[in-house]
Image 1 (cartoon, rainbow, N blue to C red):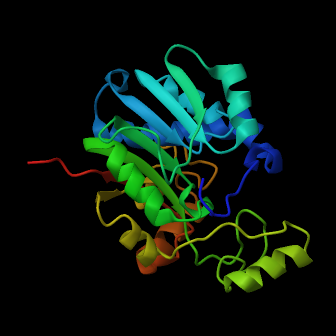
Image 2: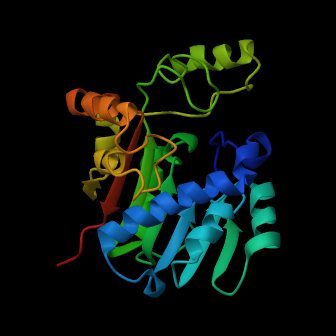
Length: 253
């Protein structure tokens, strides 16, 4: 897997990846967005789930597709997935998201939810996603923002904002980890990252309709928090902590 410093054994460090309820809500959100965008029967489509980890979310997603493959470098997570969820329509394998083992133009749909910041080279990740998608195929892309006060993985203030060398020392001091693998991008960096795709932004739509898109863990419909969230997004969208986009590979002429 080259000389990159990979973030391995992720599922062993994050017990939430074994939490069925949490993974189910995330899967429901992905399906709701894709159904709104595609407006067709998923049973005819195939899916690649990048960063499948324990496979719970992948298993739930697979119920909407003809064939689903989950990939990850997390050996423990993939082993758990195979033992608990693999069937004739769902399979798992260890694979490098920056160098996928699939042929070009293979998948109708790809799920890439909060993955880009964990890989050593997010440009290579997105290049591989573009390559293996069929022309006209889509990718559900959920991406965290670099510009947040509290970093989501380690709950340390400003961790994602400070220079990388400082971040490594910062998490060591607080005994959160030995190395800060995550590399987040700003809104503008993310737009550049996905510039080869046609982008449909669902971020504000999800906040406006939290029940439809299974986002009630973020806001409740007609609540004060929803009102304030939308106000802030309208004034400074670039400060949104998470962006939800559907990326479409352009169809060949």
